[in-house]
Image (cartoon, rainbow, N blue to C red):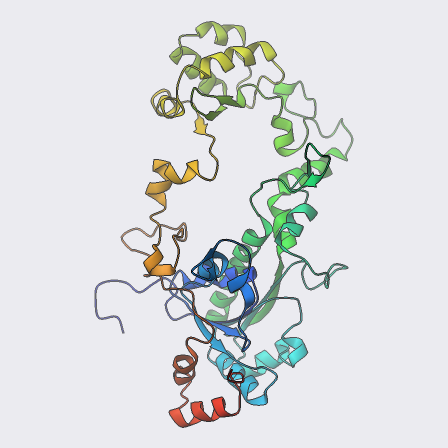
Length: 415
């Protein structure tokens, strides 16, 4: 019971059982970061996420430290009848169970959704996998980049030797898939608490990658229709630009320019912003010569204007152009790499980092601000089976029963 004036965390009292391998367990991190009790059920050998990819920090991967912070770990041998019985007790006390691995893993152990409902009629089940629980790719092995290449998000690069390379690109599917799954899971829990009706849902990381590319994919669909039905903007004389960012390549008033110490993105596609810019740099002649349309006019292909802007942007530093943007009311943004972004004052203001002492590595918190409140104090991602006794005790098991479970190897055979 909360005896102070401080409100409890937003998801205090929400209980989730997670059965995951590798990164898809991020789905429940959105819950644990907001105060839900997430119990990560692991095989006796543990989830090998702790050794997967780089960097490895004090012999533990950053992937594990981030994806499983604020969670508790219990090991169970689900092939052992007594271990399976413990898992079923966890489900009886949970709001939701998440299967973050290949589709059907739980069902193959007899834990179908129907069985889950017998244990807990209000249970919400969410499966998250690479290509989803249906379709011809259902059982195809994969890793995270696959979902982005499948969704048309990563064009291959060719190096000087003629080898095809994976370009540097933010992973979409492996991050947005868990986020969409968390949104659906929270909706399911909300309804179940109000009505007593549970549900079964699933999300594919590939679907999420495609959904994040909706503008390109839906533009291509639109362009399959006759040109007299689907056109470009009036500012482009109704000519169809290539979909998405490919259509920005020839932009001029909306383009990246070099400052005298880096690069900035200029975004004066509205006439009002363009006028503000021209007057502030004492080049009203540019506005008179190229006034543009009221909206969505990038002066596409105007090389003469692009040369003028190239010379103008080279006269100031990136920091000076950002202040100019604020003072003059014309949109200009910095163009950073992953190192420079960390040192930007806006980043540092918005992301007060979790510390090494708190979570094992400097980490970014959930990007959510709750007025007058702080996010729950973070805890370190668990070691394998770190909370075995604690979780079992929370189920009402006494010391004798816990000892019997260990003797029966329900938590795994001792090494």
